[in-house]
Image (cartoon, rainbow, N blue to C red; front, top):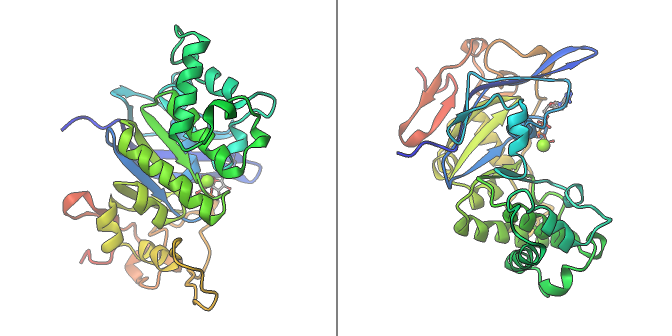
Length: 324
Ligand SMILES: Nc1ncnc2c1ncn2[C@@H]1O[C@H](COP(=O)(O)OP(=O)(O)OP(=O)(O)O)[C@@H](O)[C@H]1O
Ligand SMILES: [Mg+2]
């Protein structure tokens, strides 16, 4: 078996603040095989973006990061060093939620799609880079790509801008493509189109992908495996099909029950399930199971750290349930 592109064990991230230190990530394990697509799912604030930013070496200045073991493309990394930062824009590319964060309103799309390639292809002249940009822009579904190259970001709709950003990410031919909530800023129809672009891209690119989302539906469509996070810990992980059809952790089950089918017509009469209670304060993490205070199956033993259980096919979860 070939070595995975990303292999991280025990990733911890804390943020220093006026009120003390908040432990945001607590021993996160994540593995991304070459050419594989991994989804990272969890409620708002569970630490998904923190994982993505740690990989990019882009954490805020008040962050402290450590990992028991962290390998990217065969080399050890601390995810906080200059080396990681140097990988940004060449080996790792990121698609953000809001496409405008990646685009400069002052320059045409063509100029930006050319400039992004300069580090990856320093020997190619502008004409070559322009032609490559135009081809990729057409490839992600921007019509009249040749004319559109001369336009500015504000002349594009939200969905079209996100396609431009996807083109930008593809042009650097990264080994890892991170998409952090790539469709949340878009309306449902445009979202479906962008998911379709990402889906086609998945089939054609050799890059590995990390798709960050609060939607299991999106992850089911784009990923081979999924990592479910709750309050900075991984509660369940495994092949998408296994986790979706046989969720083992009560949090994953609750998350799936809350999901609205994004492609079904919205029915306001539909009774949406929500998970009662709140995520624990990161500054005061409980000693036992992190989900215990909200878990419908909570038991006395949950005040102790739950065992990490592994079933066949790489499906793993941390819960006392089924452990007896
Ligand atoms: N620089 C920082 N200083 C202090 N706390 C921070 C900092 N950045 C993030 N946090 C906290 O870390 C936690 C996790 O944030 P993160 O953005 O990783 O969550 P997320 O899962 O991506 O959420 P969302 O779905 O809303 O994007 C949150 O409680 C957030 O308030
Ligand atoms: Mg986020």
